[in-house]
Amino acid sequence: MNTTFPHSYECERLPETPTATLPHYYYPGASTKGGRDGILVEIRPERGHAWRGTFAFGQLTPNGVSGIFAMPDPGRFCVVSRGEGYIVDAATPGDWEAVRAKPIIDVRLVPTQGIIVFANFTELVAYGSAGIKWRTKRLTWDSLKITDVSDAFIKGEFWDIRSEATACFTVDLATGAHLGGIKEI
Image (tube, rainbow, N blue to C red; front, side, top):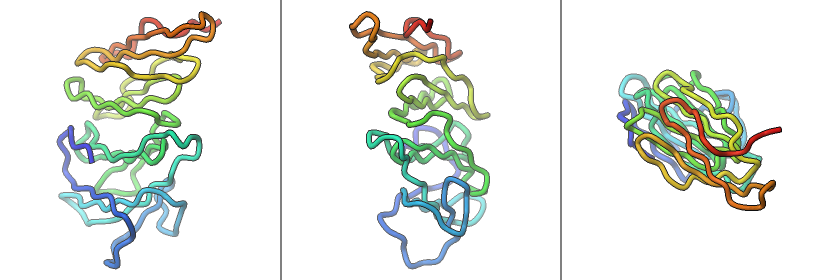
């Protein structure tokens, strides 16, 4: 688990379901009746009861990332499961939302800005402590690649099919405004 941000819970990825009985939720949906295969996590909030969650694998690409990330809101965490992202309140497992980037191919935490940035093939979306902070316009045709992250900017590159060359973009982490990237017709 990436614990860059302060948090009020503990999370542990489990290789299989232990025999101890805890409430079990399946995402998407926060159903207690079952769901798809995915990453199994045990969550122990500071306030509330321990529970387990199965976070369904994404189905759009085998190249999607996986991981568990503390969020800028200390009561929430994010599980990315083969490109599918779920943000959940650790003390209230029914309070969840899907990350609005699909499939997630990169995740960058920027504590100086108080954000976590998710990348899909063509754009970036940043979440702060109150939810989505900004979303870029389409930056690339496909194959977005983050090359550098500073306290103020994210830089990236992509193959520009119009010029048949590598092109670049820079995104302001405070606003989501960008320079470079594609110019749509």
